[in-house]
Image (cartoon, rainbow, N blue to C red; front, side, top):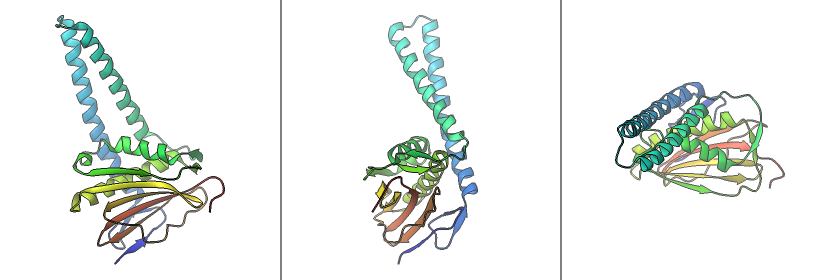
Length: 220
C-alpha cells in the first residue's frame, strides 16, 4: 500500500497522516548540524595548535609542517564558510539556479550529520537543461530537512541505503530521496509559482521524499 500527501508549511514525516511544522523540523536539523560543525571546527583548531607548537620548538621538518598548517587553515576557512551558509537568512528573493548546485550545497552541510556515515548514499543527477527558480536559502533548508528525515528512515531500513535523484520533469525541477527499494508512484505535489512543495510516499519497499520547485523556460 502506498500513500502520498503534502500540506503547505508543514513537513511530511513519512508516517501516515503525520506532519510537523517546517520551523520545528529546521530547528532540530540545524541544531544537529551545528553540533557536527562545532566538533569539526574543534578538531581543526586542535590540529593547527599542535602544528604551531611543533614549529615553535623547531620540529624535524618545518617546511612540511608549514605546508600542513596551510592545509589545515584552508580546511578551517571552509568550515567557517559552511557555518555561515547554515546560518544565512533568506532575502525572500527568487533566483535562477541549478539543482546540481542546490543538492551539492545541502549535501556538503549534511556531511556533518553524526549519522551520515552509517548509511550508503548514491546521487543520481538527471536532466538539467534548464535552471529552476526559487529562494536559494529556503531550498537549501528544505533539502536539509528531507536529508535528515531520509537519513533517519534509512537507519531503520534493512538496506541502510539512500538514493538522491534529481532533475527536470516537465515544468518543474524534482528532487527525490528514496529509502530502500522505494519508487515514486504517486503524483507530484502541486507547486505554486515561486514556491517549493514537499511530499512523502510510504510503501512496503521503502520511503520516498519529494521536493518540487518551478523551472524556467518551456517544459513538456
